Image 1 (cartoon, rainbow, N blue to C red):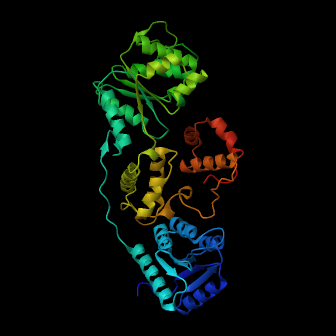
Image 2 (image 1 turned 180 degrees about the vertical axis):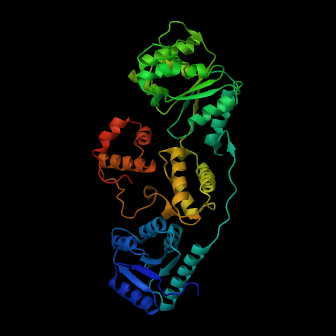
Image 3 (image 1 turned 90 degrees about the horizontal axis):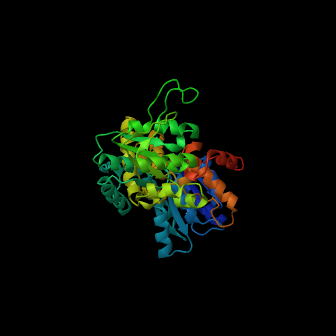
Length: 450
């Protein structure tokens, strides 16, 4: 028989000692190895230290209910089935238990035969799941380099089409990792300038003292180390498009010089007084609220209006609905091929967790998570327990409203760091702070970044 009781480990959880004793005696007589726990915390301790095939849990227990344990098992232990038992049977309770992930629902009192049959069915389902095969889904199609069919992305696609038909300056807004550069590339390659260069520039990644030289070039002898004249990014983008990412990171003095380029269409190399005319379309992007920065005096109002001729807001991943599932499947196919592994596939529960997660790092975070799953998961099936810890439900995690603001902030910082695998630069971008501020906050954050 596929589900022979030999070596099968069963954990029974109930706050009633008499029920624990009866169930343990009956299952032991059938040849199962049985563990018992009087509550959810004790059960989780056993699960963390022992491989368990089946959990049988009571519905009503003090402090933490059996439903919380069912969900905890479902999202943290992929090779464990669950049976719910209760002395308070109801249709609503049965439906809730099954939805949460219990395979069977036993009403107390139950006969020995009912218990053994339920255990057999649960282990049989476990056997089939362990050895089942899945058919890979059809890969999603891409548009402008984006994977997505949501209405939110439909608005972006329509805006790209309109912006591509003009030569106006475009400001692209959105959180880090949403794909603002993809939007800029789509506009360029859909425009009359598509055969000319597209030059992306990360303004936040270039030291302030070098940004002017990098953008406009410099002549020989303009500053220490300028041993020869060198053209800048605006020269390279002539007749094409320059994409100024993180434009909000420019200093006020640099903003004045960019404003002059927008007004006169001329640049002046560092160390030279001779302006040079350029034909460059400017696209800019920011993950910050420029209006707020204008009100604070950190961004020039006249430059804001020059950049903000057309605005395209790229939605965060959490607002894109089922696009999350399309992207997950796309990245699975991509990284499975790169790793020369059979294409992985997700269980329905795992897809549900991905769909409902907040994704603070947006598409970039999703891509990183999927790559790690494809590389690290054994076999070709990705279950909820394979997902990062911060995405999974924990019956013991304190998520109530009795935590201080500092505790909530600390947990969020740890979660963001975990989502980007400890990359402090990326974490600072997601959090909307600089690296120095992040370092100061990390000094007060206790515990691992996970």
